[in-house]
Image 1 (cartoon, rainbow, N blue to C red):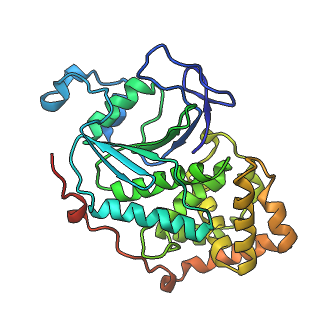
Image 2 (image 1 turned 90 degrees about the vertical axis):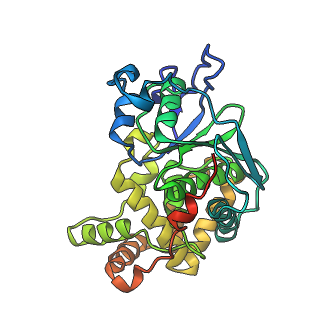
Length: 322
């Protein structure tokens, strides 16, 4: 999710004022993961629970520093954490594969600009850092943030869905490293598309596919004009993520013509951050594109199309050292 923030870190169409706290970076773009956090993290981030009111680990002094002890560099990926991950860890290998997949599927050159991943040990430390550094942010499991200094940074913690979260946010980083700008809906649609793990990209997000197919039966119709008009993250709801994913999947998989329209548009975004509406290009190539897209979504309710590759095994993901 992309937005510009004011000095109170509320989304507006202006750049944030720099903070007096040197640990707090001024923000230009932020991709907010739509994934909720646990109840304790939610209460901490909202300031509803004093840290001293909890026993055991939550009674220690809040940790507000970024991880620093260990780092792994692989091409554009730079992971910094306070626990040790082996360079050949399945999660690292998966992100290296993802980088190649994004480049090949979207016909974008492999970039060199690093994407920082600040990987916190647990949810509590991640939440404490967010609350201290980015006050007012809603609780999310992961964020992608681009600063005025052009650092492309992902913030997240080692949880049960770390592979999904990192694939989603790392995709944002790769896109912003390669393109001058990315429309909000397209940025999220592509991140939703690539977050699904597999030897080749394009496997269905089962939740999206089934809900969209059901929505068609209940009268839902695609509306790319409405999606393209969304510029603020708070205006984008869960159903919009589903539709953005569906448009990306439709364009990349329904026909060579729709795929080429998307690839041409991405090529324009390499030099022009605002090349105009994508829907106009689709309609020029396929006049009945809305009807075709709706028919494509309706077929997503076919169980034969729901096959997915297995994600990185959880036991393998959790093999790490302190």
